[in-house]
Structures are given as structure tokens and as C-alpha cells.
Amino acid sequence: MSDSPPPSPLLQNHADRLRKAAALGPTLDLACGRGRNAIAAATTGARVIGIDRNLSALATLRHAAEARRLPVDPVRADLETSWGIPVRAGSCGAILVFRFLFRPLAGPICEALARGGILLYETFTTAQRRLGTGPQNPAFLLAPGELRELFGGLEILDYWEGLSDADPPQALARLAARRP
Ligand SMILES: C[S@@+](CC[C@H](N)C(=O)[O-])C[C@H]1O[C@@H](n2cnc3c(N)ncnc32)[C@H](O)[C@@H]1O
Image 1: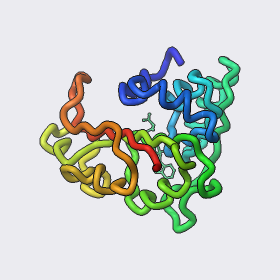
Image 2 (image 1 turned 60 degrees about the vertical axis):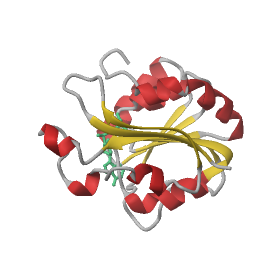
Image 3 (image 1 turned 90 degrees about the vertical axis):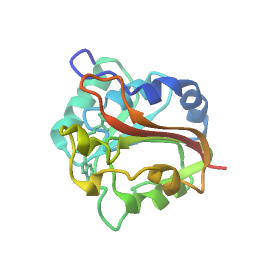
């Protein structure tokens, strides 16, 4: 995807885990947008289901996947409903969530993972407000330590909070975790 931003460093750092998790089931990219991370996950060998409510973003993802002959299925769904995530419990080898926060999904995300399945989650923290750019609505910002607490039922493999190397920097929390 030459015209889209690169995948997150969190995904790049855990690409080997994603490759292995592909044997457990498909990788779900929740709120995938145009799919910078979905495409990168598919290059590890995973079959990826990218879910978003934005049809235009999903069309971009579909074109990018077809151009590279990668197994990515874009699916339109609203993730902020009482329906949760449109997949069977225990069916996902990995779940990716980048730059999206809807706290009631934490439980359904854990349930959707297969045993041994991997969660990679990265989004903004309340420190973003001091930077004066990007998301400012507290509903979409994680409190210090909140991401780790939300997924306390999983085995935490990697956790980081701080300012990214991006220009301008972004205040982020990054989590890699495994369903025991
Ligand atoms: C900041 S973008 C992040 C896209 C991608 N995850 C990334 O990191 O490049 C947030 C995405 O969340 C999607 N989104 C927001 N609310 C949603 C909802 N209720 N259901 C599904 N997708 C949603 C938007 O359409 C958008 O593509």
C-alpha cells in the first residue's frame, strides 16, 4: 500500500506471533480503516477479516488486497452495538485493534480469541490531550494503565505507554497479549 501509512511498530514487532497464530484461525482487524495493519498481517500468512463501518475505507482495503493477491475479507459492521463482534467464540487466531476504543468490546474480544490466540491493541491515551492534536474526546482516550486492566484476563506479553517516535508524537498505549 504505497499511498497509505506504514503498519504499526507493534504489529511489526509481533509479526512472528501473528504468523504462528494463523494456524489457530483467521486474524480479525477491528476498525481496520483502509487496512494498513490488515494488509501487513496478511503478508505473514494469516487470513484476515477486516471490519469497519466505513464503506469507502473497506473498498480501499479490498483493492489493496486484490492487487497483492492477499487473503483479506473486508466486512462492514458497526462495532458499537450490543451485538459485539460478528464471529464465533474461540474462532480467531489473532485480533488487531488499532486507533479505536469501545470499552464494552473488551469481553467479546477475549471470547472471540482461540486459546493461544494473540491480541495486539494500540490506541491513544489521555496524555494526547496535552499534545493538542489528534483525538481529544475522553471517551476515546485510555487512562494510564487502563489497557492492561481491560485485558487483565489475558496473559500480557508486552505492554508500553508513552510518546511515539512519530512526527508529531502521539500518546499511545500498546499491548500484546495471549488468551491462556
Ligand atoms: C483512526 S481510524 C483507525 C484505522 C486503522 N485501525 C488504523 O490504525 O489505521 C478509526 C477507524 O474506526 C472506524 N470506526 C469508528 N467507529 C466505528 C464503529 N462503531 N464500528 C466500526 N468501525 C468504526 C472508522 O471508520 C475508522 O476507519
